[in-house]
Image (cartoon, rainbow, N blue to C red):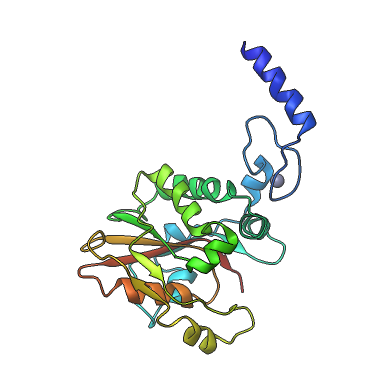
Length: 233
Ligand SMILES: [Zn+2]
């Protein structure tokens, strides 16, 4: 039977080839979403292994966080950029949980998650979810949760304002642009908890900063942040 089902898989993959969403090469039977080459070649930051890292420094003097990390460096030609682009703009949702799982399995081998109680995705505004159909950060959190066993809270933090695109704004304009755009819909699930706040890409950190400031209004909350990628300078 297994021979027949393998054969059937091979026929299907000839008819409908499964391709790596980072490089476009054919995937082998045991590969999912990205090929082994891309898996190996994604440039990891390993920031979860050092408390004093570039992402943590981004928040110095801006808001209080416990720890900060990002899975990979994000630059113009990077594989992670291609993956995140395929996830967000081409709607290939399976990329989110898969990258979340990959990152989660490397985080659990370190001290980075110690004391963390719950994962919270950076919320999108409802109007954006209606257009895109999903929140990519939630999908990443699903994979992180599967790998780490930590629960995800997608309800407590809410985005209440639609923001204009951030890309052509100065750092100050970006900060003004995201101030006060989140609120807490329900605080009881997060009281006294150490929250891991998760985003897809960190550029200036202003969106995360705005979320952290909102979360810190909840009694006894501590916040750490993690993202799939950080813009490389
Ligand atoms: Zn590949």
